[in-house]
Length: 189
Image (cartoon, rainbow, N blue to C red; front, side, top):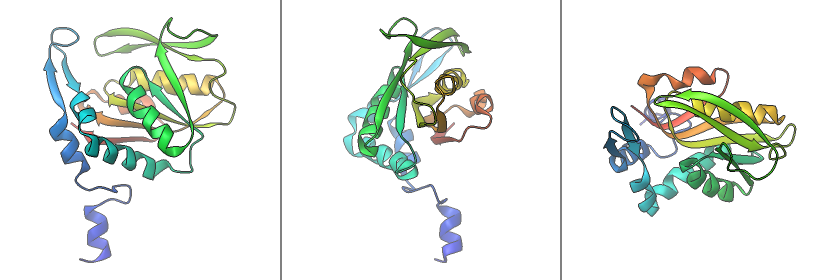
């Protein structure tokens, strides 16, 4: 196989060409959660599959090793992968939480999501000016939560390197709310 053909089949950032297929096989659809009409994409079965979870982490780490100073995880499922990715990158972990859950002074951003509104917060001292931050979450849907997290990093004076998600619900066009921010999804539906 020529290098040109290999490159076309496996883009430069695709370190594991079967990863998207394997992740898709481990996601579970939960109808009418958290409210009627919403089809929730549950990635907790992926967390039970240790080899697959490790492949997901290695995939993200391979793209960002040496390029970030901290990893930000969005409550709640972004905490799980974000903390592991931060550990592997040997950088700090920053939680973005729902309103009222952080004990010190915070910045807050409110936004609309596919089934309501929400507010997320970050400690005002969580990100240092100029710090390079990787934002991690499980799903990119309407983009509201990710856009709020990006705004919080910027309010602290940090720079967002990229947003990494396991699954992007492309039909909701959430990526459009992250204009100017690199977005990587392992799987897009």
